[in-house]
Image 1: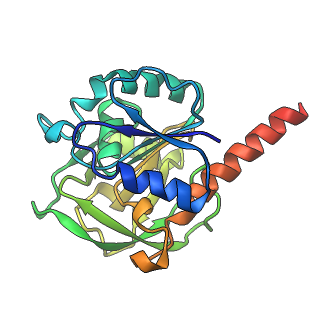
Image 2 (image 1 turned 90 degrees about the horizontal axis):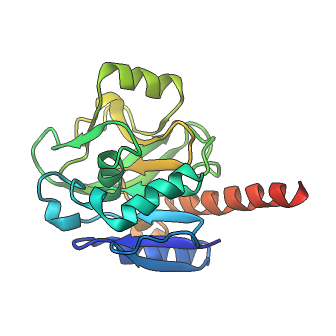
Length: 231
């Protein structure tokens, strides 16, 4: 399985993401620069955290216009797996691959600490190795992680089971609507989340609970391709 880690000017979690793939599932992984318009060789595209283009205008607002994001849109339409973390989540909403927007944290402060998430949907390619309702410890590091959407979109997310992660009740660190920490598109192959699972793949980091994100992707891909081979 081939992984791409996108790199924009201002990305700062790209190395963390690359190392997480190497250390958790040992699959081929490449850095892909924002000017590259061809992602055809990759099965999963990872959009890392950081401050793409310095977060000018809005977080992710400039990154959406790059060559590589045009290729990401195409890859999503082809059913490939797309995971955006923190600034990557912001980029995916700006590119309209996910609904809603990320606003300034309700306390207007940058938040950087461990947080507890609840796995709301374990029927995605990114969460299949978790139990439904499982509580996991994943760090956050963001100033604009306050998820917002209109009432109609929220109802749609709830009804379609597109809310993948929520902050544990009473522990919402940024004011996100409905305690949302991560969502998927309707097809389930695109997921965005504010917390950083790539920073939680070893106990020495404080938690290894993020590891199952990456093992889930690999097992889903293998199952999909095994089924295709049988047909």
